[in-house]
Image (spheres, rainbow, N blue to C red):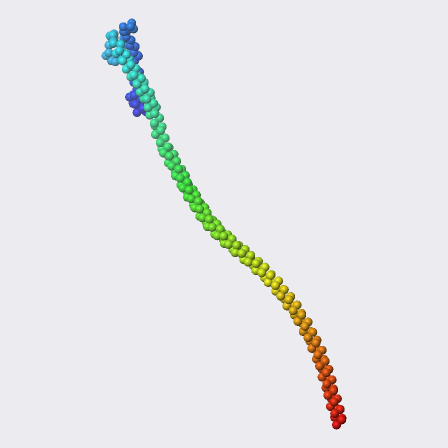
Length: 234
């Protein structure tokens, strides 16, 4: 506290003396100057009556005194604030280690938070990279699927064209079958007619053969009879 007391002694002063200065001019105002000192006079000073002073000079002196008094009052206020600040300075100095410790702890917390944030950002970036890779693969799969669908569409079109051609071929085959059936029916009719003709020819031939056999037999009998008669007659 010695330092504070020395500072207080340096910046502390006596309050300004109360001064009453009046003058009288041509307009009838008082011109006598009276000074009432409330502070102690300097050592060795003797009291005496003031002599009349010029009014403008008195006004300048009064203004100067007031300015000095206001300046000193402001200086006293600033000194009081400075002293109050200096009085709080030891407590602030004592709090510096705690503040340093708290700042170190805060720095550790901020460092840990930044590390966690970095790890979280790395994990997020890795996740986003995985999502991007999966999206790329999905895009590739969708492209392949689209190609397969296009190939299926082309195959379906080709199959539809083949089915159409097959239907036309079946229609043509049905027409051919109909014509073949008609031809076979006609051939069957011709075969039946031919069989009937063959049967008639065979029957006729059999009749002729029977007649021929009968005639041959009759001729043979006749020849035998004639031969026998000839032999008997000879």
